Image 1 (spheres, helix red, strand yellow):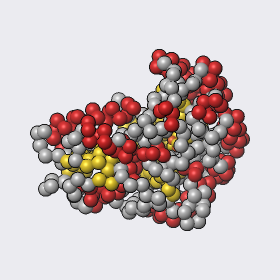
Image 2 (image 1 turned 135 degrees about the vertical axis):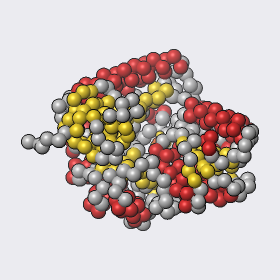
Image 3 (image 1 turned 90 degrees about the vertical axis):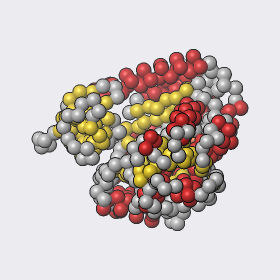
Image 4 (image 1 turned 45 degrees about the vertical axis):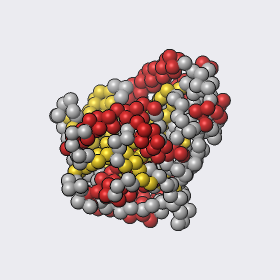
Length: 435
Ligand code: SF4
């Protein structure tokens, strides 16, 4: 193919975003040119997500659009990510015009895939495959994703990740630290250590765990903000909270999904803990880091969830007062164990439960955010406000969004919080001193 313009469309989580950044880096190093949309691309790579049914259907609708373009001019379509790993036959059947289907562990073979005819690779690698991090095309020049592990061994009964991403593979800490050193030299201000289950982390060379890795990053780098995502209550070590308390760079923010408040449902989900154990962890974290911001994930309407079970979820929400909540209606995913459970909660009830939780969480967030008015909080700005170009939009340590009068993108500001809603704060840059 003479022309080398490519566009990557990414669905799903931060891990997918990071894989797309890596693929873009590999292609740019080979002389390919990244373009802003599919209309100007000779090669379109679709990096897919299959965690929810909706994401899959969005993919097929996007592929339909690409086919309409492809009928008019030459275009190579590559599908990679979780849907391609799990549903290659469905893609072949429903979208026969797709040129290449590539599995989740093979994203680093994107150049070979594009250059060869009928290339496919769906194998899972048992060990971490290190690719050069220098060319990665980051989404900006101040906040970077750094992968530390991939895959999951937890096998929650509703989740496709162990099948779409394979078993856990850990990246040597020596490579992680090298990448962070490189980012530091480039002037990055924030790194987010990524993995499906970061608390499982074990350095394959030294056996170092996540708490020690965080400590090492904090001690050896001058990156001001360090985050990590996603945690699991069973694997979570309380030493992580101790590291947060000891090092300012390790932000006091954690995403710890509890999914359901009923022990019966947690067991059916194969989450591996009781709600009492979960609450005990939260209590300990709050004792060690009183200012901790905890966010969570919840699934409503899991098979067998009664009103009573749902009430337990509501109680947990009220008790913990999470900083943020990501809630979803259960939908059966083919290939998982729960797919064979009777999906017996009517969709109407799932919707009612979801709305109830979201309204409750909105009230909790508003109450917590109002307490921030009058405080001066550090924020890292990420964009210019699309609705008001005189404002920048940043995040404070907890991850809460703050709209700031003035400022430049990619900078730290101390912000005087002047107003608050349930989802964001408003403030202006504080230029006075601290008493
Ligand atoms: S811990 Fe459970 S929900 Fe999270 S990725 Fe693994 S299997 Fe999926």
